[in-house]
Image 1 (tube, rainbow, N blue to C red):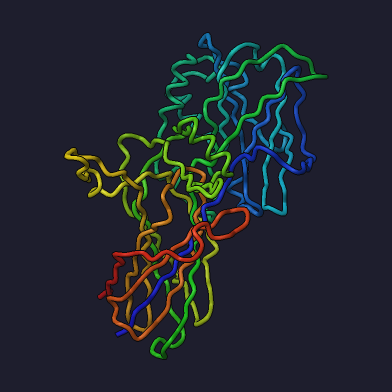
Image 2: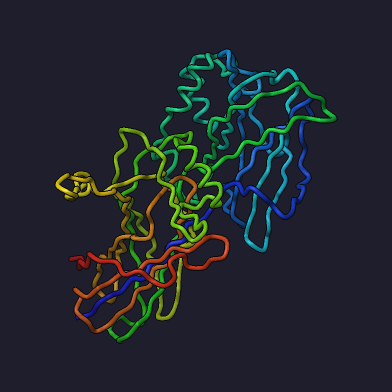
Length: 412
């Protein structure tokens, strides 16, 4: 009898705006020149991100308080011809803020109070909304357009993708931004900043193997992995409370910010009411072969829906306090399962992510799984997890956390 032990390290990363920066690097790309207004669209990205995480096209949807929609909303902006790109941040800390600047012409946008949305890599969705409205955005009712943007739900075909999928870029979206555009001049333009976040979560997984006997010929195979429970839809526009949004920004987009050593997870966000949660299964073809002492990854980034899963058994949990029933606080819960082949046998290894308390959009989870063989009963199988901060890579909790209720199942 042998046991396999998986250690899983989770890294929650930021892809968002940092309030301050050390340096800015101008990228020489063209920009249109307007009169009196400069719109800066920013988002936080990691270094060496996959091409699918860059902006392919951008829409600035501008809805006036009187219900009209400005002509700029119909323009499909591209980095190559319309946007000036600047990079900002402290490279030693891994900060990488991308700033796209657009100066609209006077006929594109009016002065006054308005709501601005920035949507990148969402052209198919916008065209679907236009078709539903039966008219261009600029000719539609602003109130109706606001409602459609706020309530638009993305399905699996729009979000559940990989970095290898051709012709697809991750949608990046802002909240509704209420601003007042003042009369100005090209010499002294008013600056408006719109912050966007990735409208998905992403996972990177790697596996290592440590052999402690000779029955498996010095190698294992990872045949598949599963993550549960993941949502089957998500909003296009973030549905998040103001304080949670600020926490997300202050923590560089981490689900866990680590501000002042406190556990500031982002909980105050919503997913569509009819959302179902299920298991995301990822078969590896060919299987990932790992020799003794090696660490291997398929080099693919996996994108999934923003999720908010609570175990069903906790929905009605309560405890007694001074004679009154008090509802226990609910916690999100996620599980990783790997199908591992050792010799001629395949096994499912599974455990809870106790240190992953939120899957708010724009979270990057890095999983490092270590498989060990030992001459111990299979029932002793354990799994350990830890979460690291993005910038300095140090463990948040320090050390490993034991996880209970692990699953061991041999595959026939």
